[in-house]
Length: 478
Image 1 (cartoon, one colour):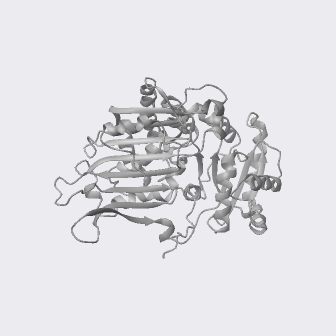
Image 2: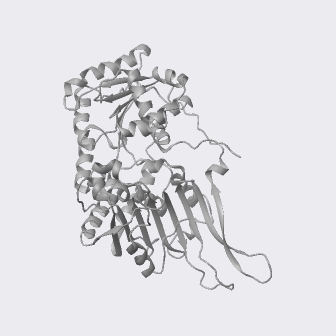
Image 3: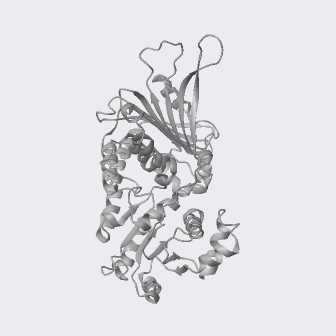
């Protein structure tokens, strides 16, 4: 079996500064990813990590705190920890006091002086968007946004979701960042873009002659995307109550997946050509002749701490008004406190106009994003024995079976692309605003829809199944 393919990159000297380094994102994803990249030799040869937080830590006590907090790092051996400490610094700063960050410029400069060279200065905003203005102002005032022309070193910023809470606020954040950074310096992250199966969507489509000629409304009946969670909103209640299922998953993860699976072939694999094609899809999404089902699991009010109209489940039917997809319904659903944890895309091909056998079932191509990353194709086969009876078999490509090595985490892939300056898996400003325009339309439409109650551990509101049944379909999970 083949092993995971690793590209030998020669990355320039880099200083990565993480703002919000004591939060859950840093403990659960960023530090584990960076430490694993360090042990695997994937970081730049000249690399330093500066972690900025509000709490009082030394560098060593900070790493001890992160290791204790992170389930992924609790069993970390002593050797990688000691080695990682050599490239790590912790800095305590008060985001409400710009003067508290003045020494940070000296710290970054001190890291460059021993080698007398400029470093790429990369900033990761792992904070609430409310702090973006404060942080960019601090960086500007401290002279930390200056690039080094003599060494062709760059300044880049990576920002986390949620990127705004509607189109107006997203546009405001874009304007704020574009005051200090150019578009090619801004990396808007959606960690689903770093998942192997999501990246494989383009490969399966455009690298296989058996699929792309059929990728249109002549052969495809409908498309489904499901992102289902078993967890309740309790651990993220304050955040989740302000977003709900629509803003938490549809606006970013689901619409990004949809644009990748339905876009036309880009001219080449450079970032802007890919994002141009994704944008065309996002701009042509339409709820007309569609439907919306929204629900809330029983007990959410207790988790949230108050009575709330926030939806914890949403399912909808939409269309893409392009020549390729005219008339093909797209069914999207996501929710919490459901019966299973699952993220997958399924392409449902049309039935044969004429089948000489009995019970010819339509073919279904499924991309399982999590768990068990895999691709499945449902194909009709003959059951052994006398006569001809059909059985729909599953042709499977599983990542764990095909590749024996550990699959890199989404954050490892995206952090490495950030360091390399590759924007293909990051979201452009016009994509963000187009996605919010569609979601804002759903927000207005769903105000007219009842908030349905569903039992935790179920499949969500029964009305979502009923709406599919009215269309002569059912929700598919592999």
